[in-house]
Length: 133
Image (cartoon, rainbow, N blue to C red; front, side, top):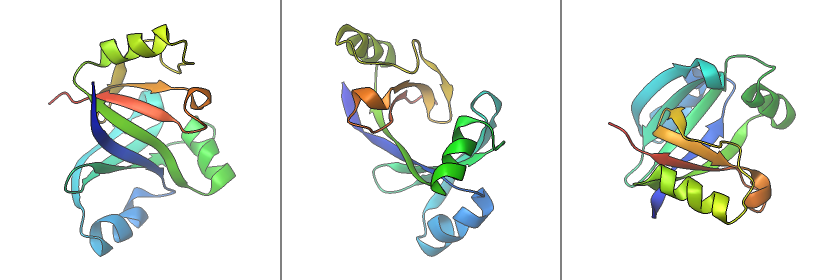
């Protein structure tokens, strides 16, 4: 079952510059940070009361996040829903015939993750995450 919006993903040119607004101006607490080589990003999760903001800085201009940044100048990238059983949610999406980006769960900053294709979600990139502490 999808339990809540876990985070909203936002592409930024620089995490350090983005912290000036999200952390310093808004007072959101910086949680996890990591460089995720296979996704081509430096990422940071900032906490709100009931969800998080994920900031994504591309490691390269020629990966998907880098191309997003060059085309759109940054901004809202994806919406992530938390689940307690990622494999079950992925199987349910597959049974419904929804186009998937990921055929199986993979590791991400939020835990185990997978993405549904925007074609399945009215043009929105949707991520499912199962938090792994």
